[in-house]
View (cartoon, rainbow, N blue to C red):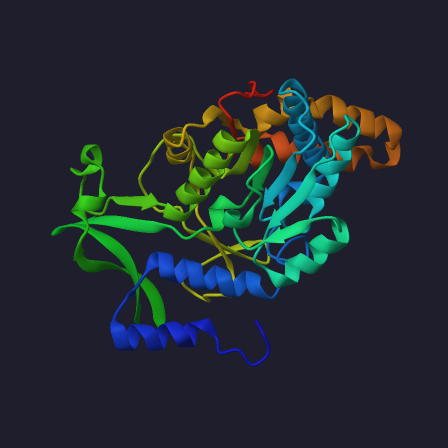
Length: 350
């Protein structure tokens, strides 16, 4: 938190006292904006570790996937590498190194709002151009887009079935703590017809921001050519229930306890994301588990080769590989969704 900045909990309390409960999406949006604004949350000293920080193999294989599809699409030289929420720039650095071996040297664009992370990204990938959002990305040339753990941090809306019908789930403040409460405005019109008749207490989650980002990227792929990988934890089929969680110092904490001081995330609804892309005319290459995707790209062989080259690190390399692809670790919960321009080829791993 910036020196002297008023705690977000105090601002929320005042807002709720004066105007009533705030929407959950408002709560998540403001909390994550404050959380990401002034700190590097990644790594062992931060609040969570992402796949690129676990092993260079992750970024390298992403780079090889992009190089492979670019070569088979005809090697357009005027190509852009775009990463949404590039963290410390680790994935980009590893991916760009792998791409270069196959003659792919794209212009680099980072979509990032955190000033603290920008400085770290600049050191890792000094040639990058920065954008506050996807709207200012170049309007010409194919795009190779990567978004790793980007969509999960965007604010969700939750709708809850009450005795009076569907209502938006809001955040109130009672007895000294924040807690979810049902709003007073009818929201039945926002619920798809096939889901309207549900038992009381049923909860639906939607992420308009994630759908909008995927819709925009899909439009760019249709207009400019290219391919995209969205990698995140989530589910392939629509489901009910809340997936809101908070991470602080690698530990799950109450999402309503300390707004602005923990990373708030929700699982990505990949079925909704695929529909968003298809509605724009892009191709959905598929959505598969991260474990299957990395296995099909050859992570096991890559790990063996790295271990043979540096036997003193063999145990760490195997451990990192297992963390990325094992069912009980990131392998099954994390999904990879591939999108492409209608005239681009299929991608490996799907």
